[in-house]
Length: 68
Image 1 (cartoon, helix red, strand yellow):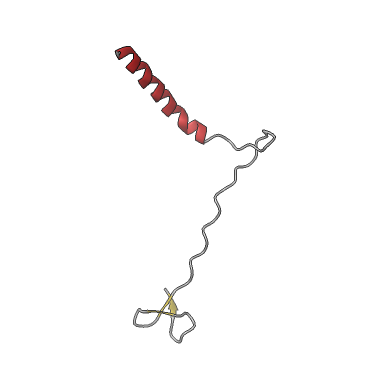
Image 2 (cartoon, rainbow, N blue to C red):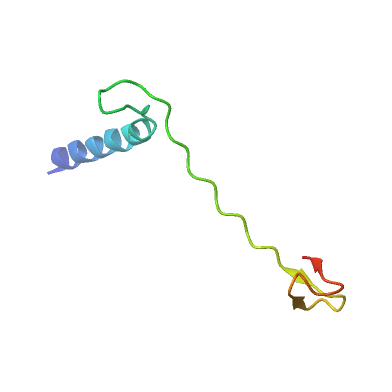
């Protein structure tokens, strides 16, 4: 019983140690050649919001509105 538990624990430890190297593998194309990995697409730019002199949100085209 103890022997089987030790074997199972050792196999889980080896699997956990191998996981980061699998995730960091270089990218390959359909033919198996190494290619540059694609990066994550950039996040869309946030819409500009404007505030008036009192600090309330207003449309950016109104008089006295400044970007927040």
